[in-house]
Image (cartoon, rainbow, N blue to C red):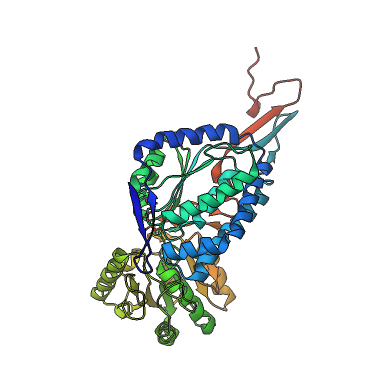
Length: 481
Ligand code: NAD
């Protein structure tokens, strides 16, 4: 059995990927457990050396892997390159991290005692990834998990198995240079659909499951991992907004809107989906954005100059058209959003990005449609704008355009955005790896990538050490024998 992979660019066959039989999963997991027994004892800075070598191999293959990302996921060329650069960046981060897996030293209330925290490897880490960042999200997880001492089992999206297999080849080159400290099956890749993800979610031998994808998927995977007291890192859907205040620099705002709303053809978890504009500038801003949309080059993502490539498949287009129909029925005025068939490669699914002027935040707007639809709403007070921004089930990314310090700080404060990411004078998409990435509510609560996200891949142990000649008890308890 194999997956026939077709390019979203033109529907041509890119290659075939052998499907991992479900019956193989227990052996895959057992191999990962065996790898863990060896890898956990390799010193963390030495584990970091493997990631340093992986970063070197990625640099050497950046152009070719990026071209494959473009071919398989349909991203425009510069975004394909950016995705591989993100892998390289997280390698650099993880190498440094391999010497910084710090715990605290804590004052003890008992004389002659010391307390401290030690961070230990956890065991196999499953990475279930989505089609839209087919390799970078795996790298965020895998590089951190590996320096933390955890083997990795990767189940990429069944829509993008070839980029995963290519990444594995590149990783194997790093392994070959690294030498014998790395056990067999340190990183494994299994190819297939939800049933393989389910095998990982339900296995007690897989202590960490990092799952990136739709909220629908997370609602299935999360409870299954929880039911066996495993740890999940959930990175699910977003419904990201930008608040634009009257003081905003509108030239910058328009550029940020267009990149955030139509980049990756609206198929980023952080894509701008809701534009919340002060009523006084709404018509002006909508006119400017519509003008920018009118000139957007839509077409072959490999061609220089193209800014909007294809959707991943016809199902995405159908869901987009259905969402636009629903928005009209809810009182919205739709601009654009039509399928594009001329000037684009035959066999691919191309659409005009849509702008929809809405009378209110409707039920349809509260759902994530994974396509380039930008809903526009007006507001009168900042409190109202923040309430609208937060009044959706998802909580991934958000932003405000303002030159008013009070507005910016209010947006970032406890009464501001409820999202995992909140930006000022930039769009909600395009995160750097240095910060923790993830969101609240139906986005799942997980954090990946930078800051102290590494802690999710390790277990914390509290140590109390008695270097005195007596045995005092805490809280003054007496228990003399
Ligand atoms: P998807 O949910 O269809 O699939 C994601 C992955 O989950 C795939 O590997 C799939 O095989 C697997 N899967 C699906 N059902 C499963 C189940 N029941 N058990 C185990 N595994 C299962 O998502 P997609 O269409 O590939 O990606 C788009 C979605 O991903 C969007 O909702 C987007 O917002 C989200 N996303 C989120 C982030 C983030 O960091 N928050 C990043 C990228 C994408």
